[in-house]
Image 1 (cartoon, one colour):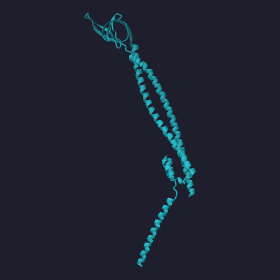
Image 2 (tube, rainbow, N blue to C red):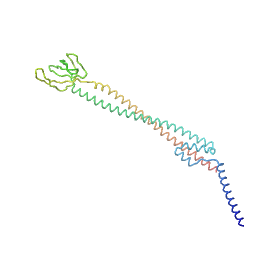
Image 3 (cartoon, one colour):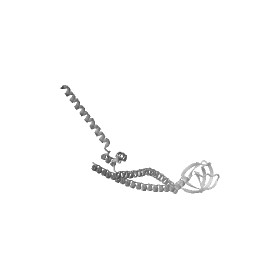
Length: 271
């Protein structure tokens, strides 16, 4: 009796185990045999977040369950998005170049304006000095002390002349533009001393250089501002086109969602 009970329990366990194994095998076969379907929620997330590589991968996995018409719709929308994104990337690269050029032009304009203002200030200062102080003297060279220092007579008055760019090789008449530089006490051979006027030759080299360079800087500044305006206009066109592309991609994204809904409805009908 005891042996029969043990045998019966063993048979029951064997049957339960067998049934469990068969169930697992059947489920596995059903999974293997059944056709794959798109993960709707995963696809929707990928579409909304522009994970187009995931969309492609999921479509290829489930291609056998997608009708030819729906497959063509998916590929059309994805192709449009790919082309549009390439255009977007190209425009963004161009925008970056323009932004870099824009910054360089702005810096050049700033530097040019600073240089122009400095030169104008110096030019005005030198002009004022010349207008207020420069005089033309017509006199006679009496004696040459050194390469740039002379005793002269202006009218009947002895004076000292300091030159900056002119060199007189002999005594005689001369005419030169000078700036009064005060007086200097001179001891005479008679034992007395006199205060002689001192004149310094007016060196207009810097003034002439500034007179030539200022118009050049002004023209350069005008050209830079024209270039800057052109860059601003080009940037505005790119921003406008990027906005249009953004809206286009959004419309393609909506089309993908509509196609996904169509697939979902088809799957429900098939069930």
